[in-house]
Image: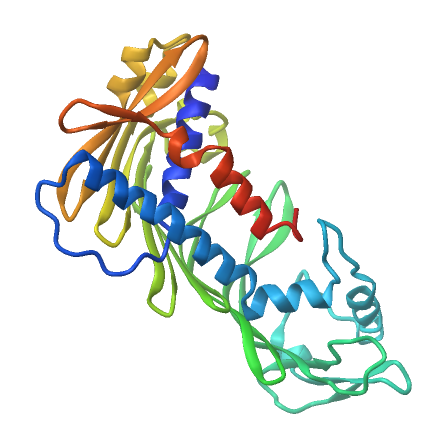
Length: 352
Protein backbone atom coordinates (compact mmCIF):
# COMPACT_ATOMS: atom_id res chain seq x y z
CA UNK A 1 0.00 0.00 0.00
CA UNK A 2 2.67 2.50 0.97
CA UNK A 3 4.38 2.51 -2.41
CA UNK A 4 1.10 3.32 -4.14
CA UNK A 5 0.26 6.16 -1.79
CA UNK A 6 3.83 7.48 -2.06
CA UNK A 7 3.64 7.67 -5.84
CA UNK A 8 0.33 9.52 -5.74
CA UNK A 9 1.62 11.79 -2.98
CA UNK A 10 4.68 12.69 -5.05
CA UNK A 11 2.45 13.82 -7.88
CA UNK A 12 0.15 15.62 -5.44
CA UNK A 13 3.01 17.76 -4.20
CA UNK A 14 4.34 18.15 -7.71
CA UNK A 15 0.94 19.63 -8.46
CA UNK A 16 1.43 21.99 -5.54
CA UNK A 17 4.74 23.19 -6.96
CA UNK A 18 3.06 23.53 -10.33
CA UNK A 19 0.81 26.17 -8.82
CA UNK A 20 3.58 28.24 -7.23
CA UNK A 21 4.32 29.84 -10.53
CA UNK A 22 4.02 33.49 -11.46
CA UNK A 23 2.13 33.51 -14.73
CA UNK A 24 0.50 36.73 -16.03
CA UNK A 25 -3.18 37.40 -15.52
CA UNK A 26 -5.20 34.83 -17.40
CA UNK A 27 -8.13 35.86 -19.59
CA UNK A 28 -11.58 34.60 -18.68
CA UNK A 29 -11.98 31.03 -19.90
CA UNK A 30 -15.14 29.14 -20.83
CA UNK A 31 -15.23 25.50 -21.87
CA UNK A 32 -11.53 25.33 -22.61
CA UNK A 33 -10.45 22.75 -25.13
CA UNK A 34 -7.95 20.07 -24.14
CA UNK A 35 -5.28 21.95 -26.06
CA UNK A 36 -6.05 25.16 -24.16
CA UNK A 37 -5.93 23.37 -20.80
CA UNK A 38 -2.60 21.80 -21.71
CA UNK A 39 -1.28 25.23 -22.71
CA UNK A 40 -2.39 26.67 -19.35
CA UNK A 41 -0.52 23.96 -17.48
CA UNK A 42 2.58 24.29 -19.65
CA UNK A 43 2.62 28.04 -19.12
CA UNK A 44 2.38 27.50 -15.38
CA UNK A 45 5.40 25.21 -15.33
CA UNK A 46 7.46 27.57 -17.45
CA UNK A 47 6.57 30.50 -15.23
CA UNK A 48 7.34 28.48 -12.10
CA UNK A 49 11.00 28.24 -13.06
CA UNK A 50 11.07 32.04 -13.32
CA UNK A 51 9.70 32.30 -9.78
CA UNK A 52 12.22 29.85 -8.41
CA UNK A 53 15.00 31.71 -10.20
CA UNK A 54 13.73 34.95 -8.68
CA UNK A 55 13.87 33.47 -5.20
CA UNK A 56 17.32 31.91 -5.69
CA UNK A 57 18.75 35.23 -6.89
CA UNK A 58 16.83 37.30 -4.34
CA UNK A 59 18.31 39.24 -1.44
CA UNK A 60 17.78 36.52 1.17
CA UNK A 61 19.17 33.66 -0.89
CA UNK A 62 22.14 35.72 -2.13
CA UNK A 63 23.01 36.81 1.41
CA UNK A 64 22.85 33.27 2.79
CA UNK A 65 25.04 31.96 -0.04
CA UNK A 66 27.61 34.74 0.38
CA UNK A 67 27.71 34.69 4.19
CA UNK A 68 28.21 30.93 4.38
CA UNK A 69 30.20 30.65 1.12
CA UNK A 70 27.72 28.13 -0.22
CA UNK A 71 28.56 26.47 -3.52
CA UNK A 72 27.84 23.03 -4.95
CA UNK A 73 26.03 21.96 -1.81
CA UNK A 74 28.81 22.90 0.58
CA UNK A 75 29.34 25.89 2.84
CA UNK A 76 31.50 27.38 5.58
CA UNK A 77 29.99 28.31 8.96
CA UNK A 78 33.22 29.12 10.80
CA UNK A 79 32.59 32.89 10.91
CA UNK A 80 29.07 32.43 12.30
CA UNK A 81 30.31 29.89 14.85
CA UNK A 82 33.12 32.20 15.96
CA UNK A 83 30.72 35.10 16.51
CA UNK A 84 28.43 32.82 18.53
CA UNK A 85 31.29 31.44 20.64
CA UNK A 86 32.28 34.96 21.70
CA UNK A 87 28.85 35.42 23.30
CA UNK A 88 29.60 32.80 25.96
CA UNK A 89 30.79 35.35 28.56
CA UNK A 90 27.29 36.88 28.54
CA UNK A 91 25.78 33.55 29.69
CA UNK A 92 22.58 33.67 27.70
CA UNK A 93 20.14 30.93 28.74
CA UNK A 94 18.61 30.04 25.39
CA UNK A 95 16.37 27.34 26.87
CA UNK A 96 14.66 29.52 29.47
CA UNK A 97 15.17 32.77 27.61
CA UNK A 98 13.88 35.98 29.14
CA UNK A 99 14.20 38.89 26.70
CA UNK A 100 14.19 41.46 29.52
CA UNK A 101 17.29 39.85 31.04
CA UNK A 102 19.34 40.25 27.85
CA UNK A 103 17.84 43.31 26.13
CA UNK A 104 20.30 45.81 24.70
CA UNK A 105 22.77 46.05 21.85
CA UNK A 106 25.78 43.86 21.16
CA UNK A 107 28.27 45.44 18.74
CA UNK A 108 31.13 43.41 17.32
CA UNK A 109 34.53 44.98 18.04
CA UNK A 110 36.82 43.89 15.24
CA UNK A 111 39.98 45.14 17.02
CA UNK A 112 39.47 43.10 20.19
CA UNK A 113 37.34 40.41 18.50
CA UNK A 114 34.78 40.66 21.28
CA UNK A 115 31.24 41.95 21.69
CA UNK A 116 30.72 45.41 23.21
CA UNK A 117 27.45 45.60 25.14
CA UNK A 118 25.14 48.53 25.91
CA UNK A 119 21.80 48.28 27.72
CA UNK A 120 19.85 50.24 25.11
CA UNK A 121 17.21 49.55 23.93
CA UNK A 122 15.63 48.07 27.02
CA UNK A 123 12.94 46.06 25.21
CA UNK A 124 14.87 44.50 22.30
CA UNK A 125 17.95 42.39 21.67
CA UNK A 126 20.17 43.68 18.86
CA UNK A 127 23.34 42.22 17.34
CA UNK A 128 25.49 44.23 14.92
CA UNK A 129 28.39 42.52 13.19
CA UNK A 130 30.29 42.45 9.88
CA UNK A 131 29.07 40.42 6.95
CA UNK A 132 32.69 39.58 6.11
CA UNK A 133 35.17 38.27 8.65
CA UNK A 134 37.86 40.84 9.44
CA UNK A 135 35.78 43.82 8.40
CA UNK A 136 35.15 46.72 10.79
CA UNK A 137 31.83 47.55 9.10
CA UNK A 138 28.99 46.13 11.22
CA UNK A 139 26.55 45.97 8.34
CA UNK A 140 24.49 42.98 9.54
CA UNK A 141 21.82 43.49 12.19
CA UNK A 142 19.81 40.79 13.92
CA UNK A 143 16.95 42.14 16.01
CA UNK A 144 14.78 40.20 18.42
CA UNK A 145 11.81 42.52 18.94
CA UNK A 146 9.77 40.28 21.19
CA UNK A 147 9.74 36.75 22.57
CA UNK A 148 7.44 34.85 24.92
CA UNK A 149 7.33 31.22 25.91
CA UNK A 150 5.08 28.69 27.61
CA UNK A 151 6.47 26.41 30.30
CA UNK A 152 5.27 22.81 30.00
CA UNK A 153 6.16 19.45 31.51
CA UNK A 154 7.18 16.68 29.11
CA UNK A 155 8.42 13.28 30.30
CA UNK A 156 8.83 14.76 33.78
CA UNK A 157 11.11 17.47 32.39
CA UNK A 158 10.42 21.18 32.07
CA UNK A 159 10.35 22.50 28.52
CA UNK A 160 10.06 26.12 27.33
CA UNK A 161 8.20 26.38 24.03
CA UNK A 162 7.81 29.63 22.04
CA UNK A 163 4.36 31.19 22.15
CA UNK A 164 5.22 34.52 20.48
CA UNK A 165 8.22 35.68 18.46
CA UNK A 166 9.14 38.62 16.26
CA UNK A 167 12.63 38.97 14.78
CA UNK A 168 14.41 40.23 11.68
CA UNK A 169 17.75 40.23 9.88
CA UNK A 170 18.97 43.15 7.79
CA UNK A 171 22.05 43.66 5.64
CA UNK A 172 23.13 47.21 4.84
CA UNK A 173 19.89 48.42 6.46
CA UNK A 174 17.72 46.33 4.14
CA UNK A 175 15.61 43.62 5.78
CA UNK A 176 16.24 40.28 4.09
CA UNK A 177 14.49 38.01 6.59
CA UNK A 178 11.83 38.31 9.26
CA UNK A 179 9.67 35.97 11.31
CA UNK A 180 6.47 36.73 13.21
CA UNK A 181 4.94 33.93 15.30
CA UNK A 182 1.73 34.57 17.22
CA UNK A 183 -1.45 33.04 18.66
CA UNK A 184 0.28 29.80 19.65
CA UNK A 185 -1.76 27.37 21.74
CA UNK A 186 -0.41 24.06 23.01
CA UNK A 187 -2.34 20.96 23.96
CA UNK A 188 -0.43 19.66 26.96
CA UNK A 189 -0.98 16.05 28.01
CA UNK A 190 0.73 13.89 30.57
CA UNK A 191 3.39 12.75 28.14
CA UNK A 192 2.93 14.90 25.04
CA UNK A 193 2.78 18.54 23.99
CA UNK A 194 1.53 19.51 20.53
CA UNK A 195 0.62 22.89 19.03
CA UNK A 196 -3.07 23.17 18.16
CA UNK A 197 -3.08 26.77 16.94
CA UNK A 198 -0.54 29.21 15.49
CA UNK A 199 -0.14 32.03 12.99
CA UNK A 200 3.25 32.42 11.34
CA UNK A 201 4.67 34.81 8.75
CA UNK A 202 8.16 34.33 7.35
CA UNK A 203 9.68 36.76 4.88
CA UNK A 204 12.63 35.57 2.81
CA UNK A 205 12.99 38.55 0.50
CA UNK A 206 11.47 38.64 -2.06
CA UNK A 207 9.07 35.90 -0.88
CA UNK A 208 6.45 36.21 1.88
CA UNK A 209 5.18 32.97 3.44
CA UNK A 210 2.10 32.88 5.67
CA UNK A 211 1.03 29.84 7.71
CA UNK A 212 -2.06 29.30 9.85
CA UNK A 213 -2.91 26.18 11.86
CA UNK A 214 -6.09 25.75 13.92
CA UNK A 215 -7.80 23.01 15.88
CA UNK A 216 -11.36 23.62 14.71
CA UNK A 217 -12.78 20.97 17.06
CA UNK A 218 -11.58 17.89 18.90
CA UNK A 219 -9.49 15.81 16.44
CA UNK A 220 -10.20 18.21 13.54
CA UNK A 221 -7.63 20.65 12.16
CA UNK A 222 -7.27 23.27 9.46
CA UNK A 223 -4.01 24.36 7.83
CA UNK A 224 -3.50 27.23 5.38
CA UNK A 225 -0.36 28.36 3.55
CA UNK A 226 0.14 31.20 1.12
CA UNK A 227 3.18 32.57 -0.68
CA UNK A 228 3.74 35.57 -2.88
CA UNK A 229 6.38 37.89 -4.24
CA UNK A 230 4.84 41.36 -4.00
CA UNK A 231 1.63 39.97 -5.44
CA UNK A 232 3.35 37.77 -8.02
CA UNK A 233 4.27 34.06 -7.81
CA UNK A 234 1.24 33.66 -5.57
CA UNK A 235 -0.06 30.32 -4.41
CA UNK A 236 -2.47 29.07 -1.78
CA UNK A 237 -2.70 25.68 -0.14
CA UNK A 238 -5.33 24.58 2.37
CA UNK A 239 -5.92 21.30 4.18
CA UNK A 240 -8.69 20.23 6.52
CA UNK A 241 -8.04 16.90 8.17
CA UNK A 242 -9.43 14.79 10.95
CA UNK A 243 -7.93 12.19 13.26
CA UNK A 244 -9.42 8.95 14.51
CA UNK A 245 -8.45 9.87 18.06
CA UNK A 246 -7.99 12.87 20.30
CA UNK A 247 -5.33 10.98 22.26
CA UNK A 248 -2.26 12.53 20.63
CA UNK A 249 0.00 10.23 22.64
CA UNK A 250 -0.84 7.26 20.43
CA UNK A 251 -0.65 8.89 17.00
CA UNK A 252 2.06 6.92 15.23
CA UNK A 253 0.93 5.96 11.73
CA UNK A 254 -1.15 7.04 8.75
CA UNK A 255 -3.97 4.82 10.03
CA UNK A 256 -4.49 7.33 12.85
CA UNK A 257 -5.77 9.84 10.26
CA UNK A 258 -9.34 9.76 9.04
CA UNK A 259 -9.95 12.24 6.20
CA UNK A 260 -8.12 15.05 4.44
CA UNK A 261 -9.44 17.57 1.94
CA UNK A 262 -8.61 21.01 0.62
CA UNK A 263 -7.41 22.91 -2.38
CA UNK A 264 -4.33 24.26 -4.10
CA UNK A 265 -4.81 27.33 -6.25
CA UNK A 266 -2.88 29.77 -8.34
CA UNK A 267 -4.67 32.36 -10.40
CA UNK A 268 -7.46 30.64 -12.32
CA UNK A 269 -5.95 27.19 -11.82
CA UNK A 270 -7.17 25.19 -8.85
CA UNK A 271 -6.89 21.61 -7.59
CA UNK A 272 -9.56 20.37 -5.19
CA UNK A 273 -8.64 17.17 -3.40
CA UNK A 274 -10.02 14.70 -0.87
CA UNK A 275 -8.43 11.58 0.58
CA UNK A 276 -10.24 8.91 2.60
CA UNK A 277 -7.15 8.01 4.60
CA UNK A 278 -8.99 5.74 7.02
CA UNK A 279 -10.48 3.40 4.41
CA UNK A 280 -7.44 3.48 2.15
CA UNK A 281 -5.10 2.76 5.05
CA UNK A 282 -7.16 -0.24 6.07
CA UNK A 283 -6.36 -2.01 2.78
CA UNK A 284 -3.27 -4.21 2.71
CA UNK A 285 -2.84 -4.06 -1.08
CA UNK A 286 -5.38 -1.63 -2.59
CA UNK A 287 -6.27 -2.06 -6.22
CA UNK A 288 -6.05 0.71 -8.78
CA UNK A 289 -9.82 1.12 -8.59
CA UNK A 290 -9.75 1.37 -4.79
CA UNK A 291 -7.03 4.02 -4.85
CA UNK A 292 -9.01 6.11 -7.32
CA UNK A 293 -12.17 5.65 -5.23
CA UNK A 294 -10.51 6.87 -2.05
CA UNK A 295 -8.31 9.62 -3.55
CA UNK A 296 -9.89 12.37 -5.62
CA UNK A 297 -8.20 15.39 -7.24
CA UNK A 298 -10.29 17.59 -9.53
CA UNK A 299 -8.72 20.23 -11.78
CA UNK A 300 -10.43 23.60 -12.30
CA UNK A 301 -9.65 26.60 -14.46
CA UNK A 302 -11.64 29.79 -13.83
CA UNK A 303 -13.98 27.77 -11.57
CA UNK A 304 -14.79 25.37 -14.42
CA UNK A 305 -14.02 21.67 -14.03
CA UNK A 306 -11.58 20.72 -16.79
CA UNK A 307 -10.41 17.29 -15.63
CA UNK A 308 -9.23 15.06 -12.81
CA UNK A 309 -6.19 13.05 -11.81
CA UNK A 310 -6.30 9.30 -12.17
CA UNK A 311 -3.92 6.67 -10.80
CA UNK A 312 -2.87 3.71 -12.98
CA UNK A 313 -0.36 0.87 -13.12
CA UNK A 314 1.40 0.01 -16.35
CA UNK A 315 4.24 -2.47 -16.84
CA UNK A 316 4.61 -2.75 -13.03
CA UNK A 317 5.04 1.01 -12.80
CA UNK A 318 2.83 3.57 -11.05
CA UNK A 319 1.48 6.23 -13.40
CA UNK A 320 -0.73 9.30 -12.84
CA UNK A 321 -2.80 10.78 -15.64
CA UNK A 322 -4.73 13.98 -16.13
CA UNK A 323 -8.09 12.89 -17.54
CA UNK A 324 -9.74 15.74 -19.43
CA UNK A 325 -13.48 16.27 -19.72
CA UNK A 326 -13.63 14.66 -23.16
CA UNK A 327 -12.08 11.45 -21.79
CA UNK A 328 -8.62 11.91 -23.28
CA UNK A 329 -5.76 11.71 -20.82
CA UNK A 330 -2.13 12.71 -20.53
CA UNK A 331 0.69 11.34 -18.40
CA UNK A 332 1.73 13.92 -15.78
CA UNK A 333 5.35 12.98 -16.49
CA UNK A 334 5.02 15.30 -19.45
CA UNK A 335 5.01 18.15 -16.91
CA UNK A 336 6.98 16.84 -13.92
CA UNK A 337 9.50 14.69 -15.77
CA UNK A 338 13.26 14.85 -16.03
CA UNK A 339 13.41 18.11 -17.99
CA UNK A 340 11.48 20.05 -15.36
CA UNK A 341 13.38 18.41 -12.49
CA UNK A 342 16.67 19.22 -14.18
CA UNK A 343 15.70 22.89 -14.48
CA UNK A 344 14.92 23.13 -10.76
CA UNK A 345 18.16 21.34 -9.84
CA UNK A 346 20.14 23.75 -12.01
CA UNK A 347 18.54 26.78 -10.35
CA UNK A 348 19.33 25.50 -6.86
CA UNK A 349 22.62 23.80 -7.74
CA UNK A 350 24.57 25.80 -5.11
CA UNK A 351 22.37 24.35 -2.37
CA UNK A 352 22.36 20.76 -3.64
